[in-house]
Image (cartoon, rainbow, N blue to C red; front, top):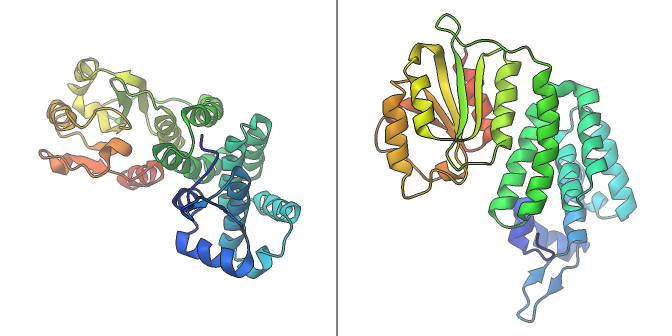
Length: 299
């Protein structure tokens, strides 16, 4: 994980535009970054944590002039108070990011449990965890956090998702009550987003066949022959299939699935458009959008 951040890194992490941050620095001294010999701004972990708090308060409607007057302790307390509000999800996401940066498992677990106690598992996973997964994905893509921090957060989220999934009765996918086939392509191991979608679908009382990580297409093909059993196929492509065989993989998958709707998300789908069977595919920019597309498909 980085220990120094550029202004663009902070924009990704906090949602505060670089131009806005420069103005706040000049007008309110909200942060005083270090400078390189060539006068490029560099920000520390402490700067990042402070700006996550600033972002949460401003998003709640605080004036930046009032936020700037707070001590660090006062800012932490104000964000904590926001997080205690049952429906203020941005502050809870900001606190989860801070806990991830600090590798603070007790705090991470506490934030999730408090949210579950306040608004229930469905709202927590839909609003808090969905937003957090998106943020963590962006930070990992841009090298703002490293593999260790991404795994730390992912494994804690997985534990909560497995517990929540166990509480929801499973349903069998049949021709009379078709469900969703949910899997990751071969060599794809980034499972957290798929588990999140699994939870959303089960919460919607949908039959789900969850195959999990690294499923070769040849293993999938026998299931696709029973096409009347499936409302859709759901997959998340992060590192696989890669650029060199993405079109070929899509051609095989779409041809074998016999017009079953296919729902995709993940980094590997960004800036990619299939050349064949376009009407069969639904691509979402992130897992939150994917969950909304799936919900709409049920109506």
